[in-house]
Amino acid sequence: MTDKSKQKISPVFKYASILVLILVLFGMFMPARFGELTGALSNYITVTFGWYYMILVTVIIIFSVFLIFSPIGKLKLGKPNDEPEFRTISWLAMLFSAGMGIGLVFYGASEPISHYLAPPSTDPETKEAFMESMRSTIFHYGFHPWAVYGIVALSLAYFQFRKNEDGLLSKTLRPIFGDRVDGPLGTVVDVLAVFATVIGVAVSLGVGTLQINAGLNYLLNVPQNILVQFIIIFVVTILFLASAWSGLSKGIQYLSNINMSLAVLLLVALFFIGPTILILNMMTTTAGSYLGTFLQNSFDVAPLYEQKSEWLKSWTIYYWGWWISWSPFVGIFIARVSKGRSIRQFVIAVLLVPTIVSLIWFSVFGTTGITVAQNSDSILALPPETQLFAIFNELPLSVVLSTIAILLVSIFFITSADSATFVLGMQTSYGTLQPPKGIKIVWGVLLSLIAFVLLLTGGDEGLGALQSAAIISAFPFSIVIILMTISFYKDADLERRNLGLTITPDQDKLEEYYEHVEEHPNTDMERENPDNVF
Image (cartoon, rainbow, N blue to C red; front, side, top):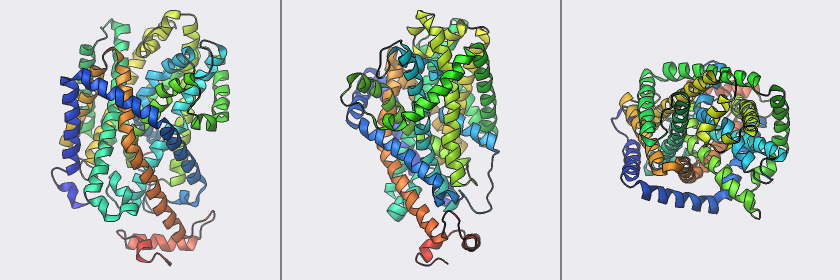
């Protein structure tokens, strides 16, 4: 880290916090106008740039797969002797809890049901709609989001732990822009990253608040309104700020492990209580259908088919926007906990493990949800945040299942916000891995305020306001992701060539290079002698 990390306030903190505060005040004092503007801008981006989102996310997947098989995959995210800080199980639990925990619970049953009622390209409430609903849901939670998270995290970890850069997104662009990333250009990039992080996480917190409110309504008959939602946000904010104050290793790691245990408990219980054989059959068929139609669905924007085109705007493009807006937060956090792992190990784990877990999760919750809803029409008419609890009400141990679900969403809320305060504090404190607690507290409060404002401006259509915010914040940051990918490949491929890395690398050259790095930790060997390193 540089001496800058010891300064009191960074320009990124000043500009980003002012920008977020302006949005909070605008949303609070002019909620209707704020909702109209975000809705109109979101619709414009979706209609005009839907094709761009589809191509971008798919190209990122292709690049990620290339890295697995490329000699670049042999490079380590760190120095030669660096070892992983966290055990693999804890590492996977932390990245998964930060990545999309609330979304899994919120949409676990409701998204398959929504696609069953309004499928992208077939008749509703049919066997074909059932199958299409499962495939579409896995498509949204499979390789695509994790490729986006992975490329941001990979670039950050590579430059921070291998190239001794500060942990800022702007520093990953040095191979393209040189020392200009240390000036105003870098500040703009980091402010964009902070803004996308705030909106992306706030969307998730808003979704979590809606579901906690719905669960309390089911269990305790608590009203579902904006006042109750404000109280929920306030209480959970106190909890996650206490967790953030305790530090990364204690707070987030412990909560992540607890939450993964609760998630497994709920998943296993529903697997055996629900239609077990049908779940297994749907899981197998869905996996094949997902892989078999992967490329077609990845590029299909349905220009001539109104039904699917409208469905894509409401679902797929919204999701791609949400994942892109989440990527600086999740990417920075995953990078922070991934030091010492090889690029190949990192990419395989980040792509494969969450996709498999998502397949299992949605097969259990989606199959059970649609099966139960087919025998209870009232469930189909309920809002998404309430459907899961209505489904549990039709099953044995309903109160136990609902209680676990509320705890799960609440802890996912805390871990996501806790991780986000660390990431935001890091990004607005010159990339230090030990951001000041005061700055983390400021960001924690602003995150909760933005989540509340989005719910306030959305009114009865709170979920729509959340979707609009995700799509808008993702657009400018998507350009940063493109630049990060190019920058990473440019530098990593140069290092690969200088090392002579192929499928079977020259071990002597590797050892010589590592000795040089140990002796000169703050220099780049290829810059000193790019034509003949050895």
